Amino acid sequence: MQKSRTTSFGAVAIIGVGLLGASLGLALKNRRLASRVVGVGRRGSASLKTALKIGAIDTASTDMAAVSECDLIVLASNIGAFPDLMRQLARCMKPGAIVTDVGSTKEQVMQWAAELLPAGVFVGSHPMAGSERRGPEFARADLYQDAVCLVCAPRQGLNAKTLRRVESLWRAVGMRTLSVAARQHDEIVATISHVPHAVAAALVQLSCSVPGAEAAIAGGFVDTTRIASGDPTMWTDIFRTNGSAIDASLGVLIAMLEHYRRVVRRGAPEELQELFAEAKKRRDALVAKLRPKKGAKK
Amino acid sequence: MQKSRTTSFGAVAIIGVGLLGASLGLALKNRRLASRVVGVGRRGSASLKTALKIGAIDTASTDMAAVSECDLIVLASNIGAFPDLMRQLARCMKPGAIVTDVGSTKEQVMQWAAELLPAGVFVGSHPMAGSERRGPEFARADLYQDAVCLVCAPRQGLNAKTLRRVESLWRAVGMRTLSVAARQHDEIVATISHVPHAVAAALVQLSCSVPGAEAAIAGGFVDTTRIASGDPTMWTDIFRTNGSAIDASLGVLIAMLEHYRRVVRRGAPEELQELFAEAKKRRDALVAKLRPKKGAKK
Image (cartoon, rainbow over all chains, first blue to last red; front, side, top):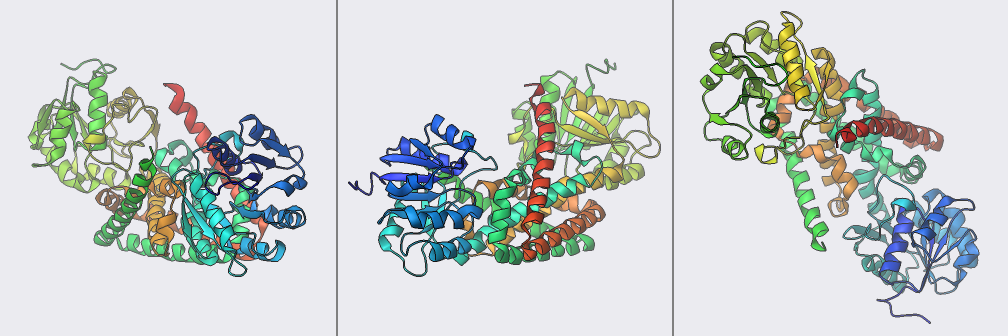
């Protein structure tokens, strides 16, 4: 029954059909990469209906037993639900099936998988795609196109076939994969995503503390704080499961801001100029590297 | 010779034809709000030629004497050049002419104007428009459309006609004007613009300190740090002339981030959820207020 690796992942179950899950469903179906896409969600949730309606999934179920015939299972719910879902998967998934996820933290997730899932079935994934919007109504078949997926193999009991299969899934929907250790993953995303989120939330709070600021906000502030409009429950899960890396990274950022403050107090133009010139040079270089990749397939 | 207030500002001099100056020129000329627009710039600068070429100015000059026949003079260079420019203006501007600016800080600028310009000729302006891009090649006739302009009248020697004239200039190019005291202006922009700039620069620096982070950056990080690509010289001038408000505001932000850090260390999900939910609610409200205004004329 199993089809060629490069052309199909067989029956795919997507557990949680929000923005990420539904976009994966659309990408798989548009490219005919699955024989069938099964969406699994909570009873009474509107997401399953929307995902069906937009054609992101073929069938919808509120019962985990629906995954028992699936070859590939993708956890795309909030991370907080992962332990429960993994316990249920361990009971109902078929032999040979593999499991991955789209969660934003990896060390805790890999530990849960090691404890709760059969050996060798899980490889962690973090596709660096998405937006502050949530829900399948914002899903796009090209959400993953040209973005990076960080992939974490388990430290023990790794099954090479499982790893290749998961990497080929993300490549098949247009991503570049990057293999990293779970700890390194968590440190990377603490600095480029989680700490920026805390900062955006604090900047919103700061702006609300000054009379008149609200009336004056403009595009720059809107961009800087965009991520603060993300789903609070998702972000709470992320901060709960990446506390130590976020703590360390916030400490480094605070020390940097204390340094800026001292430079501002000294009123030293040369030092300010150097700080801003260095930051501009580095950001321009980061964005220049990003753009050609984004445009390559357009 | 003076034309109707609502239809023309007479001969207008724009000193410094970067993004803001050239966009003002385009807006004035497109709407036929000036009998003539004179661009003044540094000798050998490419900006003057570009501004002429795109039709943002009628004539170009590297000599401040060119403003001697102008009715309205707009300082649109970096703030650092203002004292020199004001000294020259005081010598060559004609009686009855008025002066304003587009600078990002106001207390220092108002003080310079009080010391260096004739009484009653200056009203400070800060149009909250622009981008991280610089130079007349990015100028747009609608740059100011639907944005806010903060207007600061001098505390002493205010000429009511000058104030009305400057307010009507910004309204004529599509802005809403908001009258604020210079000190309040500087506190507002410290929180919504200057501190976010320091934070964006620090986040870039932070991301470069973690191996592998560069390869994983995505859209969220690009948005959050966009302002870090702004012109270092402009930002150095801003930080030099708004040091005390930036210092205070950075202190408040650092205290907030220390609080986030304690909450992360406690691993308290309810507190995290409350922080993120509050930030989301406030940002969504800020942006919702912004959007209808932006769309109103479209």
